[in-house]
Structures are given as structure tokens and as C-alpha cells.
Amino acid sequence: MVDNPSPQPMDHPSTEHPSTDRPAQRSKSDRTFDANLPPLLSAQDLCKSFGGVRAVDHASLEVPQGSIIGLIGPNGAGKTTLFNLLSNFTRPDSGDVMFNGTPIHPLPSHQIAQLGLVRTFQVARVLSRLSVLDNMLLATQNQTGEALLNVWTRSRQIAKEERLQRRHALEILDSVGLSHMAHQYAGSLSGGQRKLLEMARALMVNPKLILLDEPAAGVNPTLINQICTHIQQWNREGMTFLIIEHNMDVIMSLCDRVWVMAEGRNLATGTPTEIQTNPAVLAAYLGQ
Ligand SMILES: Nc1ncnc2c1ncn2[C@@H]1O[C@H](COP(=O)(O)OP(=O)(O)OP(=O)(O)O)[C@@H](O)[C@H]1O
Ligand SMILES: [Mg+2]
Image (cartoon, rainbow, N blue to C red; front, top):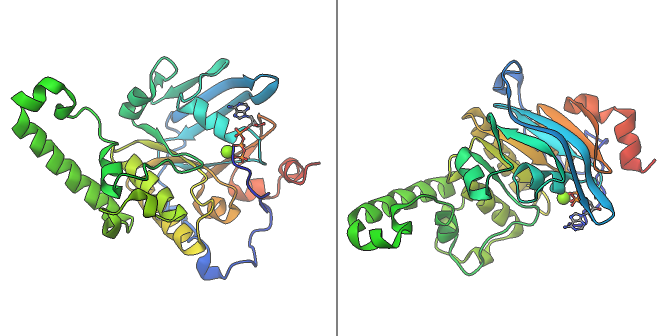
């Protein structure tokens, strides 16, 4: 767990940053999700304890297809643990997760990614001694060259796939403004650029849903704006997002709906505006 400074979630609009630094607000016409469709992701009654700590305590959550959903809560509320359960990085003690009609808990993480559910980490995980481009290419799956025998028998097919994947990776890097860094070590990227690289890498598998754990943490305001613009663009193209974030400007500008956790449990859900004025949410943040 990374210890974040306590957020100031209820002070929007803030006076700390000039308005040009704030992520662009979404207009209603941007919104692509249909509340009548079954949810793309639904979690029911999830529990996870570590020794005596109930990190997630009967938590549930729904993510409609095409939406951008926020997940907020004070430090230690269980948000990252819930992400780990949703993506099966951690097995729940009890509860179920359905993704696009499929129960995910019997499946290993790489199969969940193949179904179209990918996630990023609170502390960006990039391989520092590999180039930015190679980090991207590591995300590709089911390539002919992965089977040893094919290296000798299907070399032309392998070369063609590699060319296509490189082109795909460079296009994505270009779209997030990282193509000029493609051949640099990933270790030379700034914290914000690493977050962008993680997102870009997630896009390599054409996911349906991306879980982002604090995409704006430690990122400068200009880059936060860029990240938000990319998320909005990918959402317009049909991608669904679930975003943990302490930066309430980001939550307010991006999210259709917000779920709030405290002490491992669901505390509230509603539109960003409803959540901003919810007394129980205010009390949880103020530690009352
Ligand atoms: N692997 C682990 N082993 C033991 N305790 C853990 C583990 N992972 C999380 N916890 C505990 O579970 C609780 C929830 O942690 P979690 O990281 O999910 O919170 P969070 O809401 O993501 O917090 P933050 O906003 O600070 O990232 C905390 O008390 C934490 O110390
Ligand atoms: Mg966390």
C-alpha cells in the first residue's frame, strides 16, 4: 500500500490550481453507456482478510458497459485490495466477480486479460532495463513465436506478427505522446510517463475494461490533463474504465458514477455531485 496524502475530496472547485490545469469536464453528449445494459463487471459480496485485517468486507460494485466509474475512499479503505480481487491477482475469501457474463475467479490473470479485463498498478510496474517499446511488446499474447517449434517452422509468420505488433505499439505510443521515447530505457521515464506507459501497454490487448489504480498520483497537472483527455477519448471509442483516484478534480471531470469505500465496506454510490455532498462520505474522509 502506498501512503497517499489525505485527499481534499469535497473542495471542488479547488483554488489550488489555475483552471487551465484542471481536466476538461465531460459533456452529457460524451457519455456512451446505457444503464439498461447488463453491467460489464459486477462484484458481489467480496471479502478478503489479511490476518486480523478485514481489507475488503462484503463489498459489491457494478461497472456498466461504456462507463467511466470512480472508486474512492480514505487511505486503507480497501480500494487496491478490491482491484486485486476484481482482476484475480488476489483470491477472495468469499464473493463473486462476473466479467462480461463470465465468472473470473477460476481463471488465471492472463486468461482474464484475454477476455478483455486489464489493470494498472498503484505504483507503475515497468521493466526499467527494457526499452519503452519492448515494455509494450511484452503485453502481446498468443504469438506464433511463443512456441519453440514455430521458431524454426513458421519464421515468416513470426516476423510478420512482430512487424504488426511493433506498428501497433508505436501507434499507441504516438497517441499518448511517448513515441519519441520508444527506444529509451523505460527507467528513464518520469513517474507520470511511466503511468502513461502502463496505460499504453494495457491498450495493446484491445481491452474492454481497464482498471486504473491512481493514474494521477505523483503526476504533474499538465500530464494529468493529458491522461484525462486520453481516457475520455478511449471511452468514446468504446472502452470502459474503473478508476481509483484521490484527485477529486479527476473524479469529477471523468466519472459517470462513483463508488465510495471505507474500512473495506461500501459506503455510498452516486453521481460525483451526489457523492461530493454526501454526509457519510464527508464524515469518512474527516475521520468522524
Ligand atoms: N498483502 C497485504 N497484507 C496485509 N495487509 C494488507 C495487504 N494488502 C492490504 N492490506 C491492508 O488492507 C487494508 C486495505 O489496503 P488497500 O491497499 O487495499 O487500501 P487502499 O484503499 O488502496 O489505500 P490507499 O488509498 O492508501 O492506496 C489496509 O489496512 C492494508 O494495510
Ligand atoms: Mg491503494
